Length: 439
Image (cartoon, rainbow, N blue to C red; front, side):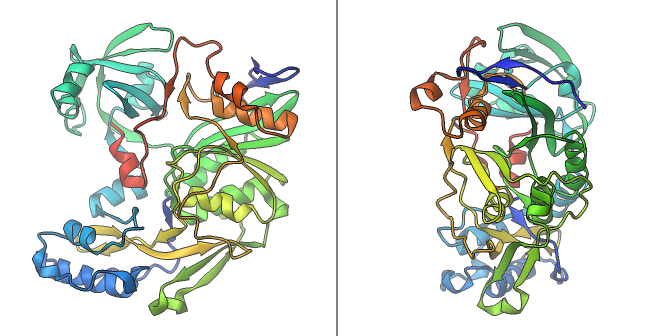
């Protein structure tokens, strides 16, 4: 277990030691065909007509033969409330969703004006080994300023293709204004889905804290690594601020490992398909899946933003009938629906197939789930920074059982760092969007 870390809270008498929702059960066989463009378009249209959750509301005047590819056809068929259906190539699906790896430097970034900041870094990636951390600013690529590259529309080009061994000179600046320059090479990056896990201390209470970034095939193992550190904790904070979703079973595992005997065997969620497929409706109970350790907590804190989607929201909605779920941050993205990944020739479709409701039949939160206490996502240092407004808001609630006063919340997050960067343009709505932020 990591040693406890102590920081000062901006409150009197307190101290702080610091999926898209996809179901893979009963997956139907892949769509078959010769995979010519015409075949692919027709198969996809037929699949949408039968299995799309809003199939009865699809435009009736769409001729699949009028579209150049299935990506355009998808755009023509989706209903306005569907911001989440997408298509991956089979190669992308196998690499990112199944194998959990890609070729790159291993960092995710956000654009704020004409500046690029680091959101997170994968463990043992080239970026991590070079010393790049969350909240650092990327300032130069091969000696050219990022600002100029952005203005000229050459930023992505400057970062180069996903070729193993490609080496660039990167310059970045940390929160204290210290700059570093190093030649960094692209390699195969393993995408750990738990970005950080620590035991914090809030006013004498041991608090487990972990950052869960996606629900993909390796998440079950990553969750076990996190929960193995949390023996005897009094509270738990699950940080899903950038988690756009993934496999629902790992949302179940995360929830069950947190609440344990308070939820075990109860209804986790009900899956409801369209009128053509009511025979596919089923109820899933809380269960550990690959989980080993359970905490049996009666209260769980969850940190969210507008990028917390689908399985992240399912985590909240499913726990809510049984334990006290305290949501800290910003309203979630609003995706109470999910997808069954379907193979289509050399692609994998992620179109909305079903909706989910909890044990009390509560769902349909298309406007998102509102936080109990508001706090902003700001880059104030690496994960578990004592200046993180979201962690400060959670700590305040633990101590006083209420939200921070508004004035205190506005003043928080600026106590020891030279600057803060508020989240502005980083709002992915699905895994494909999230992966596009990574290099």
